[in-house]
Length: 95
Image (cartoon, rainbow, N blue to C red; front, side, top):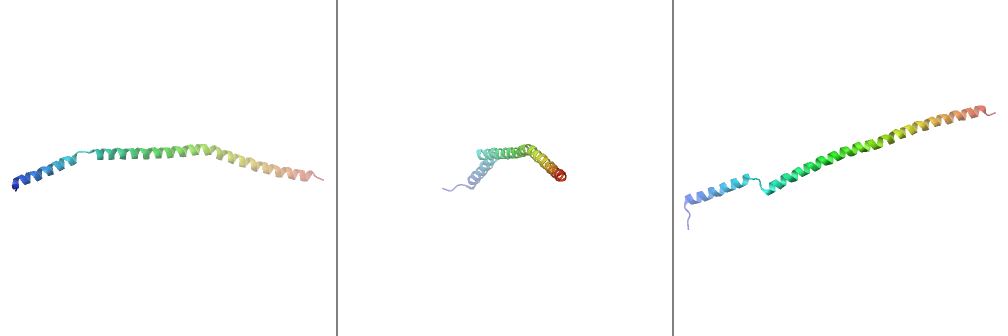
């Protein structure tokens, strides 16, 4: 059975039209893809925030220790100088 040209043309045109219309709408895969992309972006931002916060906390925790070590080093230096002076005084006082 042969189809007249007009019917074939209308059938092909209808199929093309249906294809174009169906491609315009956002399907479930596109919606899921967008939601996944947003979730990944939010997770990345949260990771960066956490990294920055970790850096601040680490700095806040190590700063007092560094200051204490610097102070201890100065005390050690002062005690060493005092010990040298004491040794000199004892040496001079000895007969």
